[in-house]
Image (cartoon, rainbow, N blue to C red; front, side, top):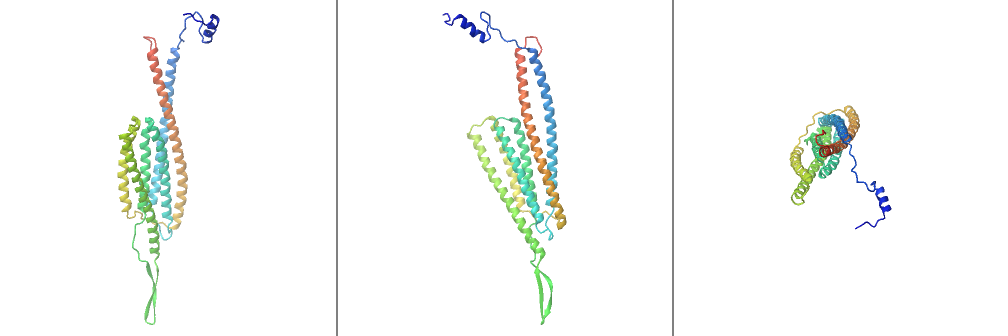
Length: 331
């Protein structure tokens, strides 16, 4: 059947599409040499990005080690101290402030872990290895909180009254007594220790309850929800982590309950004031270092994602050349 489109109109349509009437359609010429050069350029780019990621990784490890060393030093310093009659409750309050700071640190790692966990579920295998690193830091902060909680003085029986001498009057001996300063300090210690230990025990038990709920949820997801392979790998790993963490928390619960008070040194008021200043400076430094650590990690993570995409692009280009290069011609 002949076309009903006028000859001139057909010629115009062909011209608009780049086809000349009466001539065969030609396949665009592919510049193989340009394709080969692009592979070389991508390989050079990948080498450069891998070097940069290695440097960033080393910076992260160095900064992370410095943070952990400093936090360990501060926790050990505080755990060795107890209040004196001069300091009243100032040492206890420093320990409680340190515990709150460690809890805030846990929240930072937990929030970042949640973000990475969602990416693992979506198939980001590189993020799976990072979850274990965040878990290590969370576990370590919990250990440090427990260490500080255990360091508070245990209950002691101290005589409430002490003699201040006496005198005879009309054949009777009248003894002057007063409330012992040791008893007052012991009472202050008991109040601070009891409050901190109760808070720590409550937090551990709540964590154990959440872990058990999470365990049941993961088992249900694995058994009944047909998760993707990446999600399944994540859930199996997390079940193992839950088992390890549950065992660890149960051990810590026993330790806190049976703690006898590990602190031995009772500094005077002047030294405690100096320590307060030292801790203020340390907190500022640590806030800056932790902020830098997370910034470096985010830069590393973005760079890693870009690098993986570039590697996939390189694989695709090499595969195209393998398929399309003329026979006998090198890649």
